[in-house]
Image 1 (cartoon, rainbow over the protein chains, first blue to last red):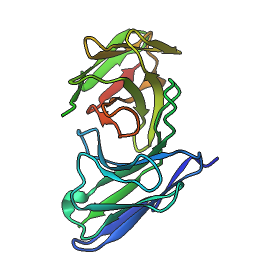
Image 2 (tube, chains in turn cyan, blue):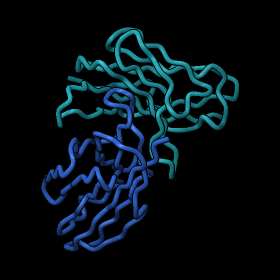
Image 3 (cartoon, chains in turn green, red):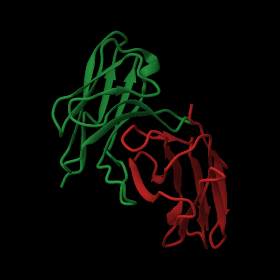
Image 4 (cartoon, helix red, strand yellow):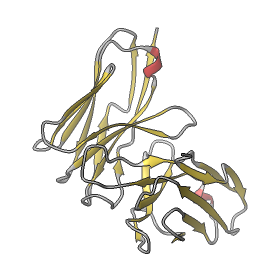
Length: 115
Length: 112
């Protein structure tokens, strides 16, 4: 199992450019998430998808859109990148069974710089 | 709004010593998580705590949860250099699949 995979690993954009961050999981998880990590801020939830076909806003959704393409894939789109979106982006997935084995599994991250 | 506070945010300690990281959260939650992050890496799950009084141990790390006090602790026993990392607690305030609210992390350095 590859777990959670993300592409690309690194990206540099100019202000105003658009891009899509890709995420896929092979663990048959129902729920998927996008977070951003900024120095000293911990991780903040951008969007999540509790199940295939649904998406909801998290704490910091402005400037982003998401698509749950199927059960495996959850993409994050920046329509018009801004320097404030310079960050490390993590995708995660989980299978919520109500037991203490539930956890979110994180991808390796995408390091995005917006100039 | 759910808030999660960790302290300390930075901790430098010597090998062989014991220490505790604290995680307070502001609203009722059924689930609390601890993660480890090494520099430039992703997050690794350490513990999932689901009920009041839950205690879990793995090696030199032990986590506990007091839902009445809205407090979790991560205790490090006889620290070794390999435990140097940033530790995050995170709380699920939405009942399961709604995403986590993270603390800012505790940057732990263990010196020989």
